[in-house]
Image (cartoon, rainbow over all chains, first blue to last red; front, side, top):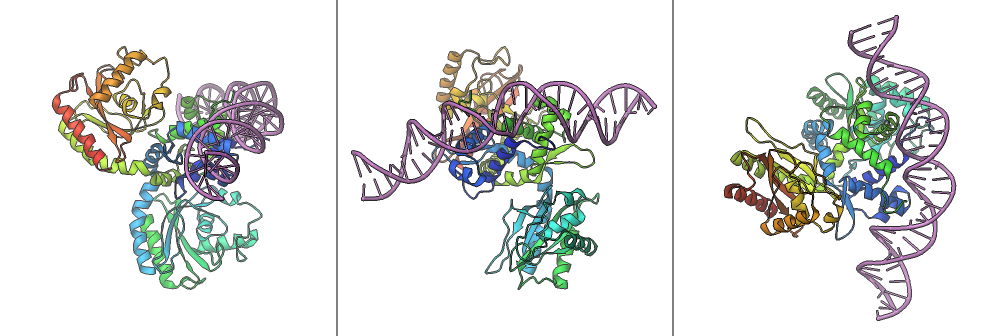
Length: 249
Length: 249
DNA sequence: GAACGTCGTTCTCCATATGAGAACAATTGG
DNA sequence: CCAATTGTTCTCATATGGAGAACGACGTTC
């Protein structure tokens, strides 16, 4: 029962680490145990391990846990993020100001689209995506971009049956495949209300100099501002943006 | 035999992650297995787990492993590093240019002094410390600063018997205790040839606004440039630096 | 101030996940 | 073409991780 396995305890450890990393505030043992779904005692052992490595620290007064210095240094050494978001963010900003839509930068993981940086829309009712979120491959515009332009084995990572996140999510594999083919031809993806009713997304890929897909930009907006058929202006701005970023990498 | 335990597999996982993070180049399975000291097969399982979480990525062409985007984002969210090194680095730079010695910023972990950032000396033969290194508490100037000014339980974390890194390392606990007392009074530590023969270090603590010790600055140089009795000028520059940093946190 | 609720921490114990080691597959270089 | 590297997968005995309960330390409430 070991076949093609990963390490359970390590998985738990990383889930705990993520929980702490992407929480708004320092977390307590009970809180973490609840979210990760394992016993308090076990979580405590993991936290001790993480502390021993300097990955997290425990506030001496509140006894809550937060990220430690080693994580920061490791982050400095991660190659892609730095470049992508230093190059991409200024350009994204211009697009957000032009269109008034939320702009999202994400990169592919083996099973999702990982949100690296976001700019919230500047509308009164603003829409945003939390950095650190992972968007499903089949129910988001950025995910579908990755399926269309990413490595072939991404397709195999798809969890079937496809989860119906909303009534408008594509759950039929064959339909999805045709959608992906269309996206590959068009060079961009739309996902009207596939992740959340009332919300639409438009996304296009970013390529490195070697031609490999390294990420994507997504525009997010309510169906009022971003219809299922994107306006030519929105499309042009998006594709100009992704091309500009691709060009500078 | 569980008592006061941590999680072995998680420990292994984090050691592997560090190995990848602080290596100069992308690492292969065999290389990692060698350095971490566990079987290749086991390492492979851990790497798969880390990939599943987006912590690392495997280069498709070379099949080597390097840090992934999630680490970068987590690094952005780590609170202390950002502040410390944004505030400290410019001030450190001035000191390096003034004295020509290597300047090291480190923070305490439960069992070591963790090197966050360094400026190498600008001499022809330059001396430096790798960021990500962990200096022992008893055999380095910065470690002794932490013992003197840090939380009391750091002292209990000391591995006895004390390892004799060099012939001049203090290995007697009582001698070390007296040394620490002296450091606490003087406000700075020296560690002539205690880590490496021919090399001396001078260090002083950084305090937060609440009076807690949050890190230290170390000056590193050959015994020619930095003698066991530091010059008044060197001492003044160091203490001015740590005070300036403490003041701005 | 006593009884309560909640927190972080520690303990015991058993099903089981883990890591050693060997074998396999896939490259690479001589 | 063989030899010597890699990265990957497999099997299996045994160490180990997680459930659950109990503990000690706070803070709150009546």
